[in-house]
Length: 105
Length: 242
Image (tube, rainbow over all chains, first blue to last red):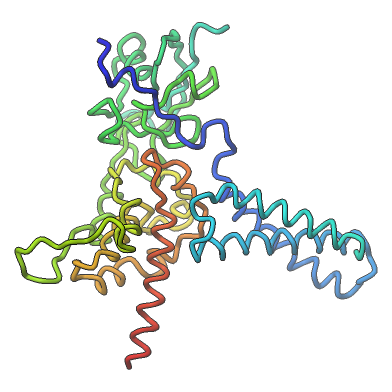
Protein backbone atom coordinates (compact mmCIF):
# COMPACT_ATOMS: atom_id res chain seq x y z
CA UNK A 1 0.00 0.00 0.00
CA UNK A 2 1.44 3.37 -1.00
CA UNK A 3 -0.44 6.04 0.95
CA UNK A 4 0.58 9.65 1.49
CA UNK A 5 2.14 8.75 4.84
CA UNK A 6 4.51 6.18 3.33
CA UNK A 7 5.82 8.70 0.78
CA UNK A 8 6.82 11.25 3.40
CA UNK A 9 10.54 11.35 4.19
CA UNK A 10 11.37 9.31 7.24
CA UNK A 11 12.44 11.23 10.27
CA UNK A 12 16.13 11.24 11.00
CA UNK A 13 16.79 12.03 14.60
CA UNK A 14 19.33 14.78 15.23
CA UNK A 15 21.98 12.47 16.64
CA UNK A 16 22.38 10.49 13.41
CA UNK A 17 25.97 10.59 12.13
CA UNK A 18 26.92 13.16 14.77
CA UNK A 19 28.78 12.50 18.01
CA UNK A 20 25.87 11.74 20.31
CA UNK A 21 25.40 13.45 23.63
CA UNK A 22 27.98 16.20 23.10
CA UNK A 23 26.70 18.09 26.15
CA UNK A 24 27.02 14.99 28.31
CA UNK A 25 30.66 14.48 27.33
CA UNK A 26 31.39 18.17 27.95
CA UNK A 27 29.86 17.88 31.41
CA UNK A 28 31.67 14.62 32.17
CA UNK A 29 35.09 15.90 31.08
CA UNK A 30 34.52 19.08 33.08
CA UNK A 31 34.06 16.90 36.17
CA UNK A 32 37.15 14.87 35.32
CA UNK A 33 39.19 18.05 34.74
CA UNK A 34 38.21 19.29 38.21
CA UNK A 35 39.60 16.09 39.75
CA UNK A 36 42.90 16.59 37.92
CA UNK A 37 42.97 20.25 39.00
CA UNK A 38 42.55 19.29 42.66
CA UNK A 39 45.86 17.42 42.35
CA UNK A 40 47.70 19.63 39.87
CA UNK A 41 46.94 23.08 41.35
CA UNK A 42 48.66 22.39 44.74
CA UNK A 43 51.51 20.74 42.79
CA UNK A 44 51.81 23.90 40.66
CA UNK A 45 51.79 26.19 43.73
CA UNK A 46 54.51 24.11 45.39
CA UNK A 47 56.66 23.94 42.27
CA UNK A 48 55.63 26.77 39.88
CA UNK A 49 58.61 26.31 37.56
CA UNK A 50 57.81 22.74 36.42
CA UNK A 51 56.61 23.38 32.86
CA UNK A 52 54.63 20.15 32.15
CA UNK A 53 52.44 20.84 35.19
CA UNK A 54 52.08 24.53 34.21
CA UNK A 55 50.88 23.51 30.75
CA UNK A 56 48.50 20.91 32.12
CA UNK A 57 47.04 23.43 34.60
CA UNK A 58 46.61 26.03 31.85
CA UNK A 59 44.84 23.54 29.56
CA UNK A 60 42.59 22.17 32.29
CA UNK A 61 41.66 25.59 33.71
CA UNK A 62 40.73 26.90 30.24
CA UNK A 63 38.70 23.75 29.44
CA UNK A 64 36.95 23.79 32.82
CA UNK A 65 36.15 27.50 32.52
CA UNK A 66 34.76 27.18 28.98
CA UNK A 67 32.53 24.28 30.02
CA UNK A 68 31.28 26.44 32.90
CA UNK A 69 30.65 29.38 30.57
CA UNK A 70 28.54 27.07 28.38
CA UNK A 71 26.27 26.20 31.31
CA UNK A 72 26.01 29.83 32.45
CA UNK A 73 25.11 31.06 28.95
CA UNK A 74 22.43 28.41 28.44
CA UNK A 75 21.11 29.10 31.97
CA UNK A 76 20.24 32.64 30.88
CA UNK A 77 18.86 31.43 27.55
CA UNK A 78 21.85 32.23 25.31
CA UNK A 79 22.67 29.43 22.89
CA UNK A 80 20.05 27.10 24.34
CA UNK A 81 18.69 26.36 20.86
CA UNK A 82 22.06 25.71 19.25
CA UNK A 83 23.84 24.13 22.18
CA UNK A 84 25.93 21.81 19.98
CA UNK A 85 27.25 24.82 18.06
CA UNK A 86 27.87 26.61 21.35
CA UNK A 87 30.06 23.72 22.52
CA UNK A 88 32.24 23.98 19.40
CA UNK A 89 32.29 27.81 19.50
CA UNK A 90 33.50 27.79 23.11
CA UNK A 91 36.00 25.04 22.28
CA UNK A 92 37.42 27.33 19.59
CA UNK A 93 37.56 30.32 21.94
CA UNK A 94 39.19 28.10 24.57
CA UNK A 95 41.81 26.98 22.08
CA UNK A 96 42.65 30.60 21.19
CA UNK A 97 42.92 31.50 24.90
CA UNK A 98 45.12 28.45 25.53
CA UNK A 99 47.43 29.29 22.62
CA UNK A 100 47.64 32.94 23.71
CA UNK A 101 48.72 32.09 27.26
CA UNK A 102 51.01 29.34 26.05
CA UNK A 103 53.78 31.92 25.53
CA UNK A 104 53.73 32.71 29.27
CA UNK A 105 53.55 29.11 30.44
CA UNK B 1 26.91 -3.72 -1.37
CA UNK B 2 25.28 -5.69 1.41
CA UNK B 3 21.81 -7.04 0.73
CA UNK B 4 20.84 -7.59 4.33
CA UNK B 5 21.09 -5.92 7.70
CA UNK B 6 22.51 -7.63 10.72
CA UNK B 7 20.11 -6.84 13.52
CA UNK B 8 21.19 -7.54 17.09
CA UNK B 9 18.23 -7.62 19.43
CA UNK B 10 18.32 -7.69 23.21
CA UNK B 11 16.27 -10.69 24.36
CA UNK B 12 14.99 -11.21 27.87
CA UNK B 13 12.22 -13.41 29.16
CA UNK B 14 11.69 -12.89 32.91
CA UNK B 15 10.26 -16.41 33.22
CA UNK B 16 13.42 -18.10 31.94
CA UNK B 17 16.31 -15.60 31.91
CA UNK B 18 18.27 -13.93 34.67
CA UNK B 19 20.08 -11.58 32.28
CA UNK B 20 19.39 -10.14 28.85
CA UNK B 21 21.21 -11.79 25.94
CA UNK B 22 21.90 -10.54 22.42
CA UNK B 23 20.45 -12.50 19.49
CA UNK B 24 21.62 -11.76 15.96
CA UNK B 25 19.24 -11.89 13.00
CA UNK B 26 19.66 -11.26 9.28
CA UNK B 27 17.02 -9.06 7.69
CA UNK B 28 16.85 -8.50 3.89
CA UNK B 29 17.29 -4.87 2.88
CA UNK B 30 14.16 -3.23 1.48
CA UNK B 31 13.45 0.33 0.41
CA UNK B 32 12.40 2.66 3.24
CA UNK B 33 12.64 -0.15 5.76
CA UNK B 34 12.34 1.03 9.34
CA UNK B 35 13.50 -0.46 12.62
CA UNK B 36 9.88 -1.43 13.30
CA UNK B 37 9.73 -3.24 9.94
CA UNK B 38 12.89 -5.12 10.91
CA UNK B 39 11.40 -6.16 14.25
CA UNK B 40 8.22 -7.31 12.51
CA UNK B 41 10.29 -9.26 9.96
CA UNK B 42 12.24 -10.98 12.73
CA UNK B 43 9.03 -11.87 14.55
CA UNK B 44 7.44 -13.19 11.37
CA UNK B 45 10.41 -15.12 9.93
CA UNK B 46 12.85 -15.89 12.74
CA UNK B 47 11.22 -15.98 16.17
CA UNK B 48 7.53 -15.50 16.87
CA UNK B 49 8.19 -15.05 20.58
CA UNK B 50 9.95 -11.68 20.07
CA UNK B 51 8.12 -9.05 22.13
CA UNK B 52 7.97 -5.40 21.09
CA UNK B 53 5.34 -2.71 21.32
CA UNK B 54 3.79 -0.46 18.69
CA UNK B 55 0.45 1.15 17.90
CA UNK B 56 0.11 3.89 15.26
CA UNK B 57 3.16 2.98 13.08
CA UNK B 58 3.48 6.55 11.79
CA UNK B 59 5.10 8.62 14.52
CA UNK B 60 2.09 9.82 16.43
CA UNK B 61 1.95 7.69 19.58
CA UNK B 62 5.59 7.08 20.56
CA UNK B 63 4.74 3.56 21.72
CA UNK B 64 7.48 1.89 19.67
CA UNK B 65 10.39 3.86 21.17
CA UNK B 66 13.45 1.64 21.63
CA UNK B 67 17.21 2.09 21.89
CA UNK B 68 18.69 1.92 18.38
CA UNK B 69 22.48 1.79 18.35
CA UNK B 70 22.44 3.25 21.86
CA UNK B 71 20.12 6.18 21.09
CA UNK B 72 16.39 6.19 21.92
CA UNK B 73 14.35 6.50 18.74
CA UNK B 74 10.88 5.80 17.43
CA UNK B 75 11.21 2.40 15.69
CA UNK B 76 8.49 3.31 13.18
CA UNK B 77 10.21 6.50 12.01
CA UNK B 78 13.83 5.39 12.04
CA UNK B 79 15.07 4.37 8.63
CA UNK B 80 17.62 1.55 8.68
CA UNK B 81 19.30 2.94 5.56
CA UNK B 82 19.66 6.43 7.03
CA UNK B 83 21.28 5.06 10.18
CA UNK B 84 24.36 4.49 8.04
CA UNK B 85 25.36 1.18 9.62
CA UNK B 86 24.93 -2.40 8.43
CA UNK B 87 24.73 -3.68 12.00
CA UNK B 88 21.86 -2.35 14.06
CA UNK B 89 21.53 -2.89 17.81
CA UNK B 90 18.01 -2.78 19.23
CA UNK B 91 17.54 -2.71 22.98
CA UNK B 92 14.82 -1.75 25.47
CA UNK B 93 14.64 1.86 26.73
CA UNK B 94 17.07 2.65 29.51
CA UNK B 95 15.95 3.50 33.06
CA UNK B 96 12.71 1.49 32.73
CA UNK B 97 12.08 -2.11 33.86
CA UNK B 98 11.97 -4.64 31.02
CA UNK B 99 8.78 -6.65 30.65
CA UNK B 100 10.09 -8.84 27.85
CA UNK B 101 12.74 -8.39 25.13
CA UNK B 102 12.55 -4.72 24.02
CA UNK B 103 9.25 -4.00 25.74
CA UNK B 104 9.45 -1.89 28.89
CA UNK B 105 7.13 -1.02 31.75
CA UNK B 106 6.36 2.72 31.66
CA UNK B 107 4.96 2.73 35.24
CA UNK B 108 7.92 4.59 36.86
CA UNK B 109 7.83 7.17 34.04
CA UNK B 110 4.07 7.72 34.50
CA UNK B 111 4.37 7.93 38.29
CA UNK B 112 6.95 10.70 37.97
CA UNK B 113 4.83 12.44 35.35
CA UNK B 114 1.95 12.42 37.81
CA UNK B 115 4.21 13.73 40.59
CA UNK B 116 4.92 16.83 38.48
CA UNK B 117 1.19 17.71 38.50
CA UNK B 118 0.68 17.52 34.72
CA UNK B 119 -2.94 18.70 34.90
CA UNK B 120 -4.32 22.20 34.49
CA UNK B 121 -5.83 23.81 37.61
CA UNK B 122 -8.00 26.81 36.69
CA UNK B 123 -7.10 29.95 38.64
CA UNK B 124 -10.58 31.40 38.18
CA UNK B 125 -13.96 29.72 38.25
CA UNK B 126 -15.22 31.07 34.93
CA UNK B 127 -16.67 29.84 31.65
CA UNK B 128 -15.22 32.77 29.70
CA UNK B 129 -12.60 31.78 27.13
CA UNK B 130 -9.18 33.22 28.02
CA UNK B 131 -7.45 35.15 25.24
CA UNK B 132 -3.70 34.71 25.05
CA UNK B 133 -2.10 36.24 21.99
CA UNK B 134 0.23 33.97 19.94
CA UNK B 135 2.74 36.85 19.99
CA UNK B 136 2.67 37.16 23.79
CA UNK B 137 5.80 36.29 25.75
CA UNK B 138 3.81 33.67 27.61
CA UNK B 139 2.80 31.79 24.46
CA UNK B 140 6.29 32.17 22.97
CA UNK B 141 7.74 30.43 26.03
CA UNK B 142 5.13 27.66 26.23
CA UNK B 143 4.51 26.79 22.57
CA UNK B 144 7.87 25.15 21.74
CA UNK B 145 7.38 22.68 24.59
CA UNK B 146 3.75 21.70 24.03
CA UNK B 147 4.04 18.88 21.51
CA UNK B 148 5.34 16.17 23.87
CA UNK B 149 3.66 12.78 23.33
CA UNK B 150 5.44 11.16 26.33
CA UNK B 151 7.30 8.58 24.25
CA UNK B 152 10.03 8.39 26.90
CA UNK B 153 12.99 9.00 24.56
CA UNK B 154 14.20 11.90 26.72
CA UNK B 155 13.82 9.80 29.87
CA UNK B 156 15.90 6.98 28.38
CA UNK B 157 18.64 9.37 27.23
CA UNK B 158 19.01 11.23 30.54
CA UNK B 159 22.34 10.49 32.21
CA UNK B 160 21.10 12.01 35.47
CA UNK B 161 18.59 9.16 35.86
CA UNK B 162 21.50 6.73 36.06
CA UNK B 163 22.90 8.86 38.87
CA UNK B 164 19.58 9.54 40.63
CA UNK B 165 16.78 7.02 39.83
CA UNK B 166 14.31 9.23 41.74
CA UNK B 167 14.88 12.17 39.40
CA UNK B 168 11.57 13.20 37.80
CA UNK B 169 13.09 13.28 34.32
CA UNK B 170 12.80 15.63 31.33
CA UNK B 171 9.25 14.82 30.15
CA UNK B 172 7.59 15.46 33.51
CA UNK B 173 9.53 18.68 34.06
CA UNK B 174 8.81 19.85 30.51
CA UNK B 175 5.08 19.39 31.13
CA UNK B 176 5.30 21.21 34.47
CA UNK B 177 7.03 24.14 32.76
CA UNK B 178 4.20 24.58 30.24
CA UNK B 179 1.73 24.87 33.13
CA UNK B 180 3.91 26.99 35.42
CA UNK B 181 4.21 29.58 32.62
CA UNK B 182 0.43 29.51 31.95
CA UNK B 183 -1.15 32.64 33.48
CA UNK B 184 -4.52 30.83 33.76
CA UNK B 185 -3.05 28.15 36.02
CA UNK B 186 -3.91 28.34 39.70
CA UNK B 187 -1.42 25.81 41.08
CA UNK B 188 1.87 27.56 40.28
CA UNK B 189 3.25 27.42 43.83
CA UNK B 190 2.28 23.78 44.41
CA UNK B 191 3.70 22.82 41.03
CA UNK B 192 6.99 24.62 41.60
CA UNK B 193 7.24 22.90 44.98
CA UNK B 194 6.55 19.52 43.35
CA UNK B 195 9.26 19.93 40.70
CA UNK B 196 11.85 21.69 42.87
CA UNK B 197 14.26 19.91 45.17
CA UNK B 198 17.13 17.57 44.49
CA UNK B 199 15.00 15.05 42.55
CA UNK B 200 13.36 17.78 40.50
CA UNK B 201 14.64 20.47 38.17
CA UNK B 202 17.81 21.07 40.19
CA UNK B 203 19.08 17.58 39.33
CA UNK B 204 19.45 18.58 35.65
CA UNK B 205 23.05 19.46 34.77
CA UNK B 206 22.42 20.89 31.29
CA UNK B 207 23.62 17.84 29.37
CA UNK B 208 21.02 18.37 26.60
CA UNK B 209 20.77 14.61 25.88
CA UNK B 210 16.98 14.93 25.95
CA UNK B 211 17.09 17.82 23.48
CA UNK B 212 19.34 15.84 21.12
CA UNK B 213 17.09 12.77 21.01
CA UNK B 214 13.59 14.27 21.18
CA UNK B 215 11.79 13.07 18.02
CA UNK B 216 9.47 16.07 18.28
CA UNK B 217 12.44 18.45 18.38
CA UNK B 218 11.45 19.87 21.77
CA UNK B 219 14.03 21.07 24.25
CA UNK B 220 13.15 19.78 27.72
CA UNK B 221 16.49 21.15 28.96
CA UNK B 222 15.37 24.67 28.05
CA UNK B 223 12.09 24.06 29.89
CA UNK B 224 13.96 22.80 32.96
CA UNK B 225 16.13 25.91 32.93
CA UNK B 226 12.92 27.95 32.83
CA UNK B 227 11.68 26.08 35.91
CA UNK B 228 14.95 26.83 37.70
CA UNK B 229 14.65 30.54 36.89
CA UNK B 230 11.00 30.61 38.00
CA UNK B 231 11.86 28.82 41.26
CA UNK B 232 14.59 31.33 42.08
CA UNK B 233 12.47 34.37 41.12
CA UNK B 234 9.51 33.12 43.19
CA UNK B 235 11.81 32.52 46.18
CA UNK B 236 13.23 36.05 45.86
CA UNK B 237 9.72 37.54 45.58
CA UNK B 238 8.60 35.68 48.72
CA UNK B 239 11.66 36.91 50.63
CA UNK B 240 11.05 40.46 49.40
CA UNK B 241 7.44 40.36 50.63
CA UNK B 242 8.26 38.90 54.07
